[in-house]
Structure formats: structure tokens, C-alpha cells
Image (tube, rainbow, N blue to C red; front, side):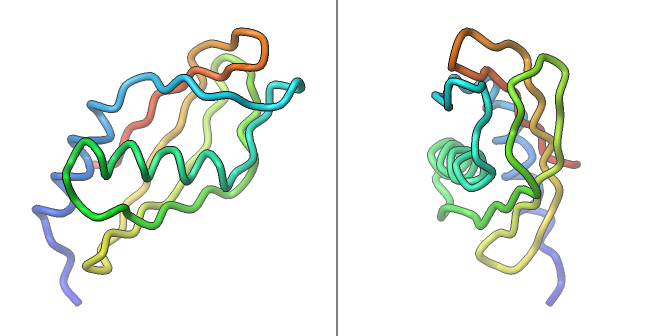
Length: 103
């Protein structure tokens, strides 16, 4: 199935616009990978008006400034792209991070 440029553009713009997300995590300042993926997917769906994409992340997000990981977004049409999640700050048990989809 060909990848839809409009899907990539929509998700890419939404991810760039998502900015910092403030989300709760454990007292160890670590967020489970499934929660990161779900939060990213919900934010992108809300911003684009598109169905919630399938987002998977390889590991838990460690609450250390500068830490980043690559997640994979799969849109409803089957197209996929990478999403970078990067920790920008940590406040107690809150991890603040930016998301950015590949172009």
C-alpha cells in the first residue's frame, strides 16, 4: 500500500505542534512505554482530528533531561513514521517532554 503524503504531513505537523506534554509518572521519574505511546497517540489525534494512531515505544521513558527515544506511529491507512520523544524537564514525579515526527 503506498504511503500517503497527506497522512505523514498531518501527523508530522501535529507532532511538531504538540510541544511539551506534562504527564505523571512513578516516584522514580520513569514512565511506562505503553503510557508514553498512549499519551502521544491521544495528543496527536486530538490535534489533527484524525483517528488515534497506533504508537509503539521500545522502552520506558526515563525522567532525565536530554533523554530521548524513538517511537513508531502507524496511521489508520497503514503508513508509518518515526516519532522522537525527548525529555525537556523533570519536576518531582512529572516528566515534561517534546514529541517530533519525522518529515
